[in-house]
Image (cartoon, rainbow over all chains, first blue to last red; front, side, top):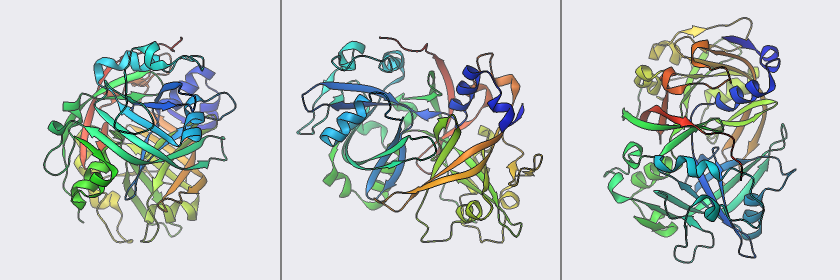
Length: 202
Length: 202
């Protein structure tokens, strides 16, 4: 199928949105944990987390327009802290359920069957069931003019991951970790390792 | 393994970089095709492509600091156009080879064994061997203060994908497409579909 932009825009609205949501390929799936100043916890599924840099250690994600209430964004701006947690394949349905629109006074941790984990004095909740837990401090945000979304960037403050899946060079085995990827908003995939390539030279 | 930011920063430099490059999870792998005004083609591997929005259809990627020559970035700014192409698993070693630092007058298409494909009058080269080909026009860029990287955003102009892998709702089967994901800079993975979830409701 070969489509010009006019043909893409002429597709049925639901088909067009589904297609365009998936076309960037499989993405990693993260549960974002946060808490309001008043102590209300929030957990939300994000599929747009990207690596921004290793030094300083930065991750970013896309926040949709704040024309409706965005609890995670509000908490991050209020407290300055959040967590990103990657979940194992057997929990993907539970994790997906956090994307439902719960009211502000409901914690998705409780509603979807995840446990809050508070590690040392980090001021945002981690997800106990997750195999990679990353604690971040808000660093900066960029408003994207084209569609009023935001790139929100956090600086890594703390990290938990099973030793057994990291080899001597610092490589993580994601197949062994049994993590999942997501296509669009609701198709889930597991990973099988193909191999490592050496640093490429001409 | 539980590490604070101080413990992460104290790791051996190579291990720290490897770990932090992977910690955001598996990402989709794209070959970015571009051409200079003088007609020199360029092909480069990017592992930071993200979905920015479906309406208008926007994708973005992170461009490292332009303190050294960045041929793709230069071409995109010069011509206003580029392509993103997702390759099948059997070509991952060839695709990885495009990440080598070839001089400006060498086309990675030729050097790494890919064929340029020119579709209609789109002013940037697609990769013939790829199963998803996306043509984009430069839309905007955001300079990230924390590390001088850039979020470069393109607006989708054209799209090629096999009909056989899209179902009636517009869902793409990435397992059937046999595409790959990448962890860090050099570990490759294939995908196995777990399942689709319905739109979540409280």
